[in-house]
Image 1 (cartoon, rainbow, N blue to C red):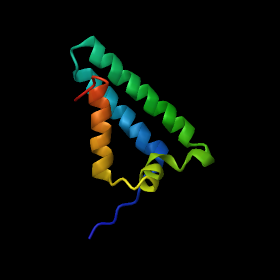
Image 2: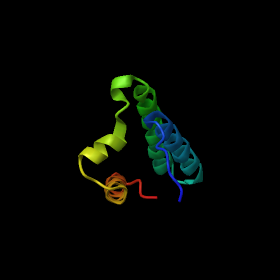
Image 3: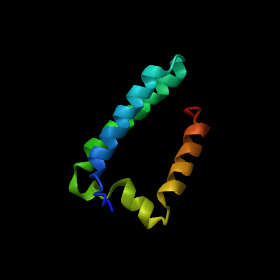
Image 4: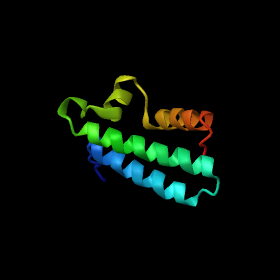
Length: 88
């Protein structure tokens, strides 16, 4: 059995920023690329802010407090992205 250790929120956000940039490189449409790069900037900002101790709670704890499982959060996130026109 494998035990997973959660990453600090700052590391998770930096990883997501890298994913967004890699995805943006695949887009041919400037509008989509722009929005993906904007998402990467937002994740970088969140990562910087997450280094502050009182912010370290992060998205994972907020999701837990809201009673959302990982799958529910992913569905909600996908819905928000689709609504913004950034479906991938």
